[in-house]
Length: 287
Length: 257
Image (cartoon, rainbow over all chains, first blue to last red; front, top):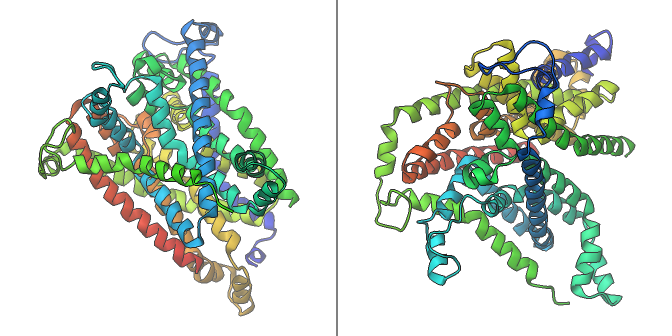
């Protein structure tokens, strides 16, 4: 093999691993620690980072607005994740039972709208939900909505557009698990007297639990750091952690504050993630 | 046994939900109405106006430069990383895998904020290099994952055959390994290119005056310009994305057969 040229395979391993790893250490890991450090720095009046060390930023985090925003971030993300799963499981079931030639077509059909630009998709929803748009007009005509009320700029709109954006992220892993599910188990359960829905919930759903967990992570984590959708669709009444970080960075120019909030978000995200990575790596190593 | 129709209905509903915004967008790009409200007549006017906008062309140029640079760099770095991850099982590779995998799941905003604060701390101005670094950082992981998947299906006996026939290690890599893996590597590069063009969040934090990319430009236009103009721009970008996707699908098929 190609290792022969080198004295030891360790040299080749280092040569192959080095460039990418060093890049990520410098531009991913180092900046993350830098953020943590900056959150212990004082802020200057000119919007820079001051000298010395302080715990002031963290005491300011008790500001009455923050717990509300953190709570909203967690709550909205949890809702989005739950709804994504609720839709993904029946669709994955349908796809997994579809004839083989339909499977690839349907999968492609699911992927295509999501290869379009993210910001464009969010904008498209803004047009759809616009007060003069046809959805609002139709709702007013039918009497579901009073004239003058808004479909945009509230938490519900944020949840709707986020579900739209993240549905494929939950659909694909759930489908991958459903593909491997042995559907004769469902028939067996029903032969043994299970009702159809009962069999679906007690046999199918636990059978694809691995996919469901992956889906949960893939939807929950990015939504904890949501910025664009609450910004464009949600307005200031639906601000999430991501929006407050951007505001501290650009509007208030309080960098240590932004850094402290980012560290908080990192913590929120990192704990479940590291656990999953290690479990997976172990599982791969053991098989 | 009769199966429940319920999952089928949910699937049909979800598909409708998926395509609704895209269809509304493209249809409205030909609508005379400025606010993309009710249909008032067919026009190509929005496309014509688009061509005359210098700021859009500048953003387009920046997007292309950054996407080309970032996809090229991440293709090299990601492919090397994939080889290492595929061939070795060691403590170093555990760390390596974690470092490659983490950017895929970390919210983009954290990547953007941390890089911005790094560049602020270093006193670096926000130019196209900064954007290039930001985009490359998240693209490496995607390329590595795509190439890694190809390597797992790859038949390494051809490499051994080449060595048995007297090819040196360098010749083997250049004449056998790389040509056979090229479609996979290119597919990874194309994915990186698409992701770079698509990226909003990281660009938002890292772009400065004069280094606006298209998604940033679109967001600025959402606040300022007629929605119909953005519809036209979006429809054009849709065409480009579909073309890229079609290309990468083709490459994928070739590398599989």
